[in-house]
Length: 190
Image 1: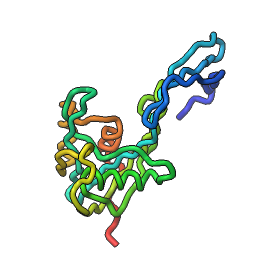
Image 2 (image 1 turned 120 degrees about the vertical axis):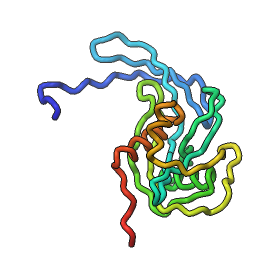
Image 3 (image 1 turned 60 degrees about the vertical axis):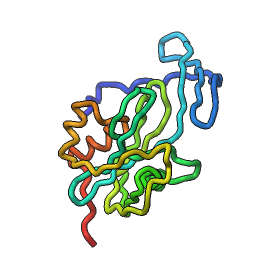
């Protein structure tokens, strides 16, 4: 329970933003800000797109994962399917589209878990995390740049993968931790 004697932090004043770099993937700005009671200063802000990530779970409590090499950290790890939400696209539909493009599987039932900002102090990039149930194989992955080996991995193996650093990406970790905590359950059979 929150202590009512603790006051809320005051908002910072902003005095405009200068664009340093801008393309369809990344926008870098320099914002002049002033925290309450302090001097003004310039703060870099990275603006990325809206992202949707989905964990497909089957009836045997396995999670559909992709094994990918990521050149930025220079390593291979397991990830969940996900990607950019297109302008005007529903985030849940984007998550399902990305799952189909990257794995060839599409869920029938989708549950929203959370929307979060993975680096809230400097990067603006809302991430929507979903859990998908009752997935059907609809074909081969159609996005060769994003596809990788696909495997259904038991949820019981996730703590070990996490401890060994074999899970990559904030959205993947959020979804897996949510599942490990038992906060999502499969839909009741109809």
